[in-house]
Length: 115
Image 1 (cartoon, one colour):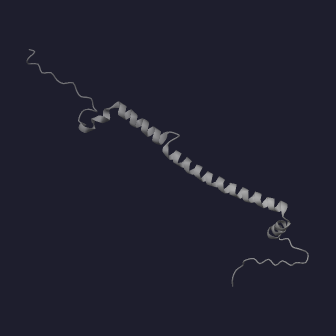
Image 2 (image 1 turned 45 degrees about the vertical axis):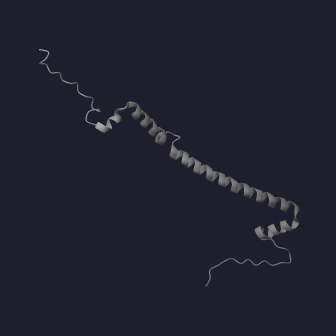
């Protein structure tokens, strides 16, 4: 009786049945590794696009800082000249505050419409 009995094979799991070359997708370590990689690259607070944006804004802030340092140096130089040189004080007053000497006339010409 044992000779005539046919044994049926156990059914194969769903992922290994019929996938052929895609059976490597059933590897739980591969799936976990890919999920971890996707999380690190796209969903983490320190992901790649955020790091790129932070680096760009840091570069812009450094340029802004250098520009402001140059402006501060120029202003300090102008202040030192204003403290020591009376001709510089006169020039500054004439240019910025439209001041004049008692015996002068000032004509202010503003750019207007051309006819």
